[in-house]
Amino acid sequence: MASIDRSNKQFGFKRIISSVKNSWNGLKVAYKNEQSMYIHLVCTIILLLFSFFLKISMIQWLIIIAIIGLTLVIELLNTAIESTVDLVTKDFHPLAKIAKDTASAAEFVLSVTSAVIALMIFIPKIMELL
Image (cartoon, rainbow, N blue to C red):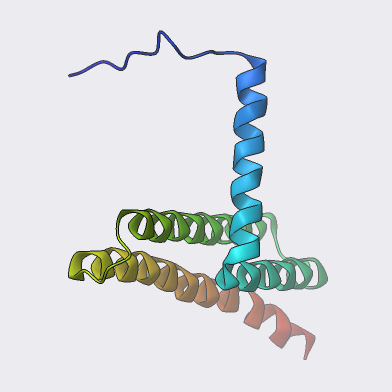
């Protein structure tokens, strides 16, 4: 197994702060340039409002937070894959299309799964109110 040469890497608080700044910049770029990130933000706000209003249980809160986080992570990975493919080639290539389409499909599958989970949590709570 090959080892990684980290002799030139700086470790410490400054590097952690730099990493956090880079991550924050990545979030800002994604929200400014990706329509689906905006949609996820709106859905996140709606989910949190429903969660507070319907007084969901601690386990349900954990599930809601997990699906929000996972959906945002997959969207960010999808954006990274699409950007990398665009960097490598602007020309149409079947493999580039497969990379972009399957990354998008991963996001779609998780979004649908998250919606189903949210409905399973919120519909019974809404029915109790009626």
